[in-house]
Image (cartoon, rainbow, N blue to C red):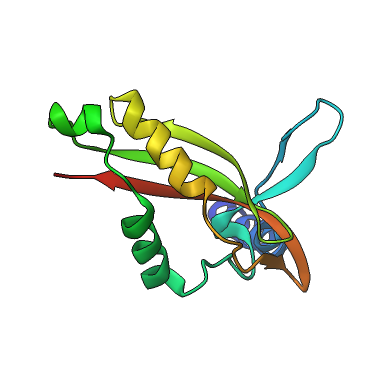
Length: 146
């Protein structure tokens, strides 16, 4: 058998063996929300079977942000605009927790306001892997425009 044909056959056999395992891989991180002793598994948003959803869907989320967000006076007077990229965890009970700023808008008051808005969110529908509810990390931008 020529070397090239054997190499092609070897690659094909290894792909058949590896691809089913790759489909089952989930991105899971551990988060310590309160103490150094209690850890929870957190799945990334794109790697769950059913993603968590805000009540009312995407339109409801936009309406909630627009209704709840208050432009900080200091940033408004200085005409500071920007987008705050935040992450948070939707727990197995749908509650939002562990809100963090990933990339700020350059003004601390905008960052604090984005964290406040996310912290006031109502319970989400939970994310699921199979039929089991799991904690899921969500990344959400909050825009501040004048």
